[in-house]
Image (cartoon, rainbow, N blue to C red; front, side, top):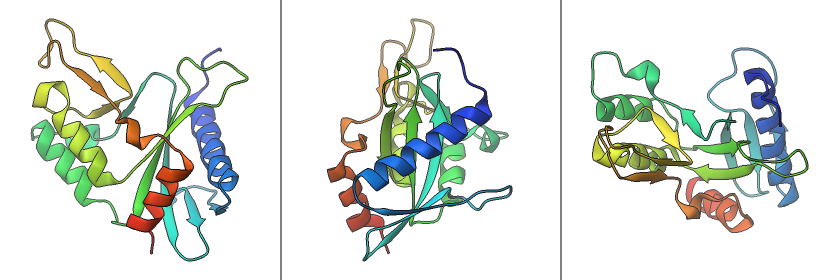
Length: 170
């Protein structure tokens, strides 16, 4: 598949995320326009609501904390990023890399705390500004020989969505 623009990645990711929640029988409200707050979707289970921040990618990773890195180490940048998030907002990561036109992208659900934990362990414990779907660190890298990957339990399944509502919904 030909590379999409970043705008197309964002629009497509949000649409797939909304469709997956609707597929699991949740009510979905989509925000449109500039200067949105920290979330893109509001998803309702009838009893509880989640705010969803959707992040799309077509390169196997999501840059999350680069803007927090100036003057501090990776772990401090991750903590600054984490402190800026509302406790009821969760992430939906959408990955288009390696998907065919007729395939769904891979999608994952995670709370900011879970994301911070994975990023803190990245690069053999050094930490990183990027969340990787799968990345093996090369011989000259800080995390040489280690592999960073999104935990299997983050896969956007009906069970994972239910867990997120039970744990983070209000």
